[in-house]
Length: 113
Length: 112
Image 1: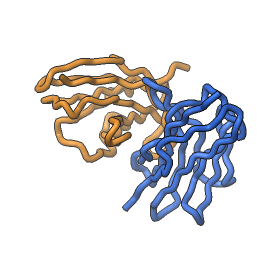
Image 2: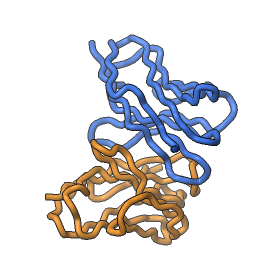
Image 3: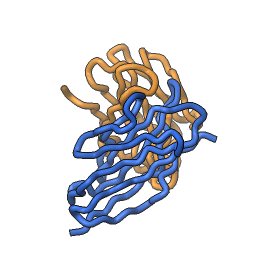
């Protein structure tokens, strides 16, 4: 069974630009969560989608948004990029919403210059 | 406030020695508890989880963890460490349908 796939693996963007990251969950998993990992703040929850609906949201500005498609694939968008948005963005998939077993992808490394 | 604490930022152990990584949490209810491992440049791999039942749980790669309600702890152990265990280890907590709350992580260095 294929794992969680995140694309692209690496991105370099300029301040002010926007970026879209993609996550394909494990087949059959309907919940996708996104996390931001930085050396200073550690792993922080961004949001969770289940059945195309945002179920939970972390404490991030509105520049961070996401969506989920009918096939459970999810995208995360960050608009008006700031230097502080440089981070590893991790996607996790679960069978259902809530604190069930979460499987993580390898992440997308975003660098904002 | 709800929190997850991993008191040790760095730990160094000799190959073959035993390992214990500490994790303490502060939550009103008994949470779901997880340990993840992350190798450089990689995502997180689930080592083990505790939802309920037996307080000693076995995971992959020879790891185990013990849930102690009275101490609000969920420490990770391994009897004999291998050089390939060098990585970052994260304790995570989840409560009632919300996101995972991660500790800051413990970086494990294994010496020959």
